[in-house]
Length: 119
Image (cartoon, rainbow, N blue to C red; front, top):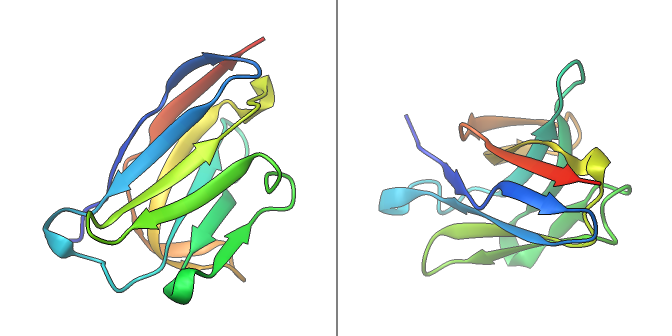
């Protein structure tokens, strides 16, 4: 089972920034697209951003002005830079691989990292 390891979550004040990291140890999933989803209690998991071959990127329309997804291929790590965070961004953020943007789904998932934004 491929593993994805998220880090970088935490508590931040509204207007602040966080950078989430998603590593895939051992070079696994290096040839798969990767993405970030988030979920709040009572709501469906929603896609935030994805990155694929040739540095193609997708951003959810509601997030595109405040987030940047990038990948360090040497480290096999994907990052999600989030700026101007709002309380409604509070959620568990999941890293994923083999993302299907059309269906908002993925084949591989991390365990998630909690992001809390205080007002």
